[in-house]
Structures are given as C-alpha cells and as structure tokens.
Image 1 (spheres, rainbow, N blue to C red):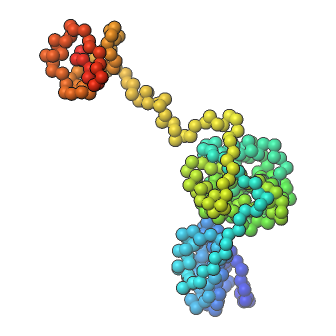
Image 2: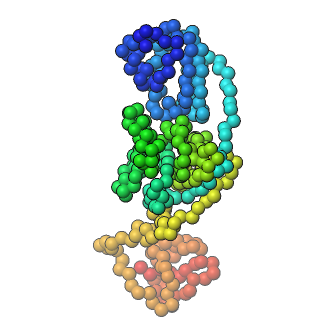
Image 3: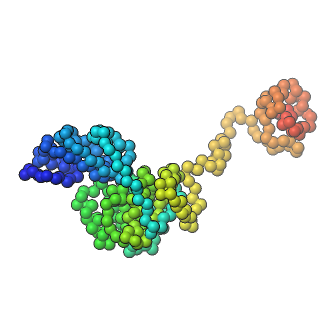
Length: 336
C-alpha cells in the first residue's frame, strides 16, 4: 500500500485500520465502488464506511451495488451519490428443484420443531438461517446441547474463524451450519440438502437468496420456513414476490395442542379473577329457596325494565311468593 496501487479491494474495517495507521491516502483516488451495500449495512460497517468516505477525493465517480434496497441503503445513496442513474435487474425466481414448505408455529415451539426435523438427518449437509446474531447463537447452543454436529457463523467471528468454519462445513466435518444472512449470498458450496429459515427474513428478496443455496446445478433440495404469528405479514409478501402459494405442513404429533402464548388469558383464568375471599361485613350467601330465580340482583339495583323498587314495596313483598321473571326481563323485589 505504501508503494502505491491502481486498484484497492478491501473490507471497510480493515481499510479503516490502514487509513488510521497512515498506510494509505485517498486524495488522488478517482473511483469508489461499494459492493453488497445492504449486507455491509446489516453487518454494522456503516460507521467505518462513512469515516472512509469523509477522507476521499470529492471529485470522484461512485458506483453502488446492492441486491436489495432497504431504507438504510437508500439513505446512503442520497449521502454519497449525486443525481445517480439507477439500473434495476429483475430478481431471479427460486430454482425449480427446490421443494418449499412452511410450518405455522409459535416462537417457543421452533427449537423443538427443528430438532424433530433434523432427527435422522445425520450425514446430510444442512444450512439454517437466522435473522439476528442472537437467534443464531441461541439455536446453536440449543442444538449443540442435544449432541448435534453443528457450528455457527456470523459477523461476530473474526475472518480466520469464519474461514475455518466454512472449511469444516465444505469438508463435511460439520453437518449443520447456522448463519445470518451474511451467507445467503456468496456461499458457493454444492450439495446442500436442506435449508431451514428459523425465522422469516425482513426483506422478501432475502428469502430467494437463502433458499438459492440448495438445488444448485440442477440438483434437488428442500427449503423449510418456520413462520410465527408475528412473521405472517412478511411471509405473505414473500409469496407475492415469488408468485407462489407455499405448501403448509401440519405440526408433528405432540405439538398441535400447544396453544400460543398470547392466548394464555383464556376463559380458564377469568373465574379466578372474579373470585375473592369474603370480607368482614359481606352478606353471607344462603341456598336458594324452591322456585327462586338466580342470579339475584343487589339491593336497590335498577332492574332491566325500569327503576329500582322502593324499600316499602320490598317490605310488602317479603312474605309474598316470589314471582317468576317475566318476558320483559323485570324481576321481583330483592331481599337483602
């Protein structure tokens, strides 16, 4: 770098380190190319990119390539591009050899379902995608605790660690690889038998990139997506994008009766909320007399058909036989 170069290809983080060490200067630079802009945004490289751009030659030509155009990338284009010309290339559809299916499942059921799907799949090459580093790490530790041959990869790993994980996966030393969308593009490994989407990607186009890791070169492959209730609107957008209704699969036996956690406030809890221990001064209940209607209205309460009964009228009716509730909904006098 100190001797000069015509073309420099680098990751943002490493290039920023060289800049801070004064190994490279950009004042005579004429072109800036940002490739995979959306992925660099997801990986947290935007602060490094902005720091590098602030030291570049302002009289330059900029080119930006991105498979998707989320709001962050649109903001970046407005900051660094001057009256740009946009070229859009149609998104390719999933390969015909990919058999797609979906499970409608609650979040707390996902790990158990994946464990069941992976049962008996030893020796097959499986790739699982998660939208966040947290979900990838959680799933990795859960499957590892079940003695599965699994590894994880995300932007938290150093480049040397990523290379080793990919080498082990390529050499089939690892059966199951869990990754963020960092691997949804660029990974070139043949023979991936199954792709599982642990959650629905935020961008519908990422779904196409994810399942495109299987059924390559005319081979067959499976793609399974787990869709929770909160992810259903995003999954509808995916089906609209690929113009296909994906097959819904029933949950395995033993999981179908599990109710969503959001339904825990069911009618089983309501009677408990209505009951309370008797307090001092509360009227003591007595068994209903023969012919008496239930439930009884409280004293001086307004009846359904009119105003409350006067107390004198109540006293006159105490020794009378209780009249049944008439069709208009009015009841007899109330005895406290």
